[in-house]
Amino acid sequence: MEALFSVDGATVIAIILFILLVDSMFAVMDKSGILKVVISQLVHAFGGRKYTLLLKAGAFFSCLLLGGQFSYEGTLLLNWLIT
Image (tube, rainbow, N blue to C red; front, side):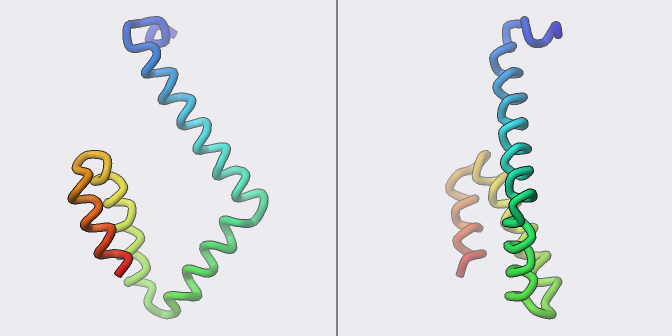
């Protein structure tokens, strides 16, 4: 509770609300079945190339992290993934 009322309290509250928002979005996608459909379409599209799927998924999430730190480099890697 002490962190909420400190100088950086607004930042802590914003992070907590963001995490709750992302969690609720994933809960809705899971309950509606969208998450299962998207994952099954990805697995079907890649067929037996599971390591390619693993590589592309890992690179995609790395681009998301890089995009926050170095916006141009993250965009270049994401462009490489799409093509």
